[in-house]
Each structure stands twice: as C-alpha cells, then as structure tokens.
Image 1 (tube, rainbow, N blue to C red):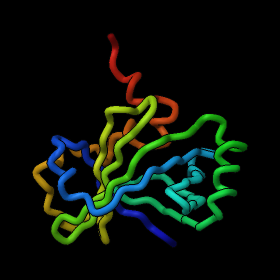
Image 2: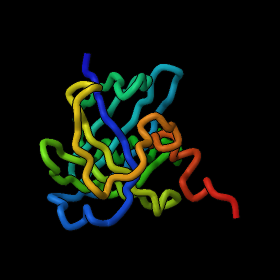
Image 3: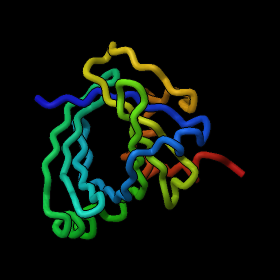
Image 4: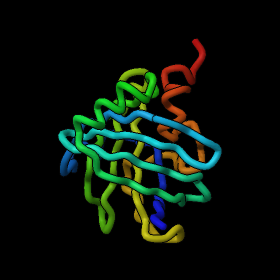
Length: 158
C-alpha cells in the first residue's frame, strides 16, 4: 500500500522566497469524501492526477495517485467538484536533505501559506528552516479538503 508521511507548518516569514527552485499554479477539486477517504483531482500546469487519500493517523495516511490527461482532469473539476475547489501556487525548495513544498493559497484562502515536508518514516528527523513557524500537522483546519468548506478568510470574526 502507498503511504504518505508528511509534516505541515505555517510559514513565519518570507525568507523562503529567495530559495525557490520551481513554482507551479494548481487547481484541485474534491470529487467525494467519505468517513475513510477523499477523492481529489488536481491540475498543475499541463499535468494532472486523480488521488485517493485515506484517514490521517499521526503524520501518515494511505495515498494512491494516478496520472490523467489534463483536459480530462479539467472536465472532472467542472463536472464533479461542485465548487469544492482550491487554487494555490506550490513552490518547491531544497533545505538540507529535504525538499519542501510551500503552498500559497488564492481565492477565499488568500493569505494562508503552508509548508509541507514529506518523510520516509514518522520519526525521521528534519532540520526546520528559520522561516518555519507553528506545526499544524494535526490541525484539520489546514487540510485542503477542509479549506474548501471552511476557508481561511472565514476563520476570523470582525
């Protein structure tokens, strides 16, 4: 079984921007969510995938991902996601032994910037760059599937 192990953090400063290796605009939508998994379609540039993610237990969850033609993925977004869509720019940068993914959200989630690092095992040590802030790995508000129904812009009262 394919397993994803990742830790997620808020970004405390813009210092990471000077070290970006690549960036890509992404649109991802959620086709379905059950008690045990979510099904997502993602378009990133001219590439696309359909993805099945299981429940998060600790920092790990099952994940199956399959490439699909980008034009078909865009159709799936329009036909099956019913507005449950996230737009973001993903930046990649290398820090030490790890590649970090920095997601800079758009739309109703503008202002939210989250850093993720994938690990080989849950107890793997990772050196945290100075720009990394609070860890939110276990806070479901920061799951992308939650951000479609409870966007960042609605978290704070006036």
